[in-house]
Length: 184
Length: 184
DNA sequence: TGTTTCATGTAAGACGTTACATGATTGG
DNA sequence: CCAATCATGTAACGTCTTACATGAAACA
Image 1 (spheres, each protein chain N blue to C red):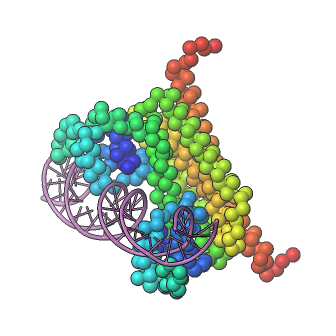
Image 2: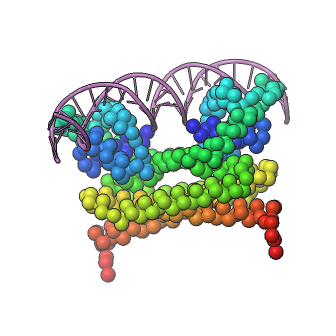
Image 3: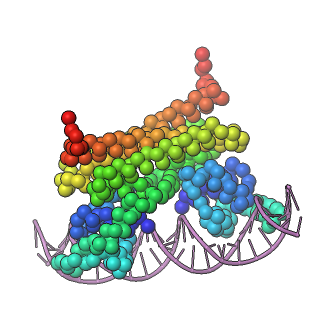
């Protein structure tokens, strides 16, 4: 149930409409906790019904500006400090690695190289984000964002290195079993 | 829809019952693609209905031994080689980091230290697994398992280092704003 | 004989994705 | 006036978790 807490967290820093929150999800939370439009609107309604949020104002196009209530803030802090983070690590790319034995060495190497370059691409993207201009939010949230960004940089670097290492490992194994046409 | 492919992959390497597959999930896939009992049995029925699996034999307690069909094998290879891995990276622990500004520096540091030691614990567990005895499966799958295990080792090491770095960063920032009682 | 392990199935509900549907406001 | 953006809501469907339910075989 972390979506609720993501919403509470964003609203603890600023008042916002569902639409605004949606944009925040796309911009800053996309890589950590993505959420779709229907999910955000639905959850906001539920949070308001539960008294964790309130509609503080109404704007132009039926816009609702939500603010966090005291109850909501208490729930948020409880989540942050008292509950252990659930580690749900479903990893599609890694799952495939379990079944590399079903492929030829060539196919395995292709898979790993693709994985490495995807990680490298993602890494470059994050670096652009870090060095880019989009850092005009209010100070403290940006500091946190920087921490998370650094995590992303380290993760993608690790992934690329690992994929290259795994490819080298497989290449060596394959060579020792089926040596090339013209060995030394 | 990766659960289907996880099951197909396991059954491409060996024939197994739902119960056996469940044990394989607990042992080897737990950290990459966890699946519950009801999920496994349900998906097996669906896969058999779709013609990707067959019940090759029946055992003692109503046991069904599944084997992969040619169609299933084709689907598995297609997934492995043709479809791009979906990167769904919902990360509860990291989500919390976005909201550290809502906590006192002390609370933030506590959170990060907990995160670091959890990562360290997980790392140690994986190392025990690597150096332990449980490697008596048929050769090739173990080779893949080793690759994945190495990924886990690198990931958990990265997580620990990152958490320590983040804690140091926050501690420095906090000190520069509110210096200790007895400064130099 | 009784407990553990093997073995499968179903049902309710939470969570997530995709698509459909509608309309107001702004800006060119 | 037309397009893009702002703004919200709902419906269908798929996936995942938790819990309930049942019984056979092994083993001590």
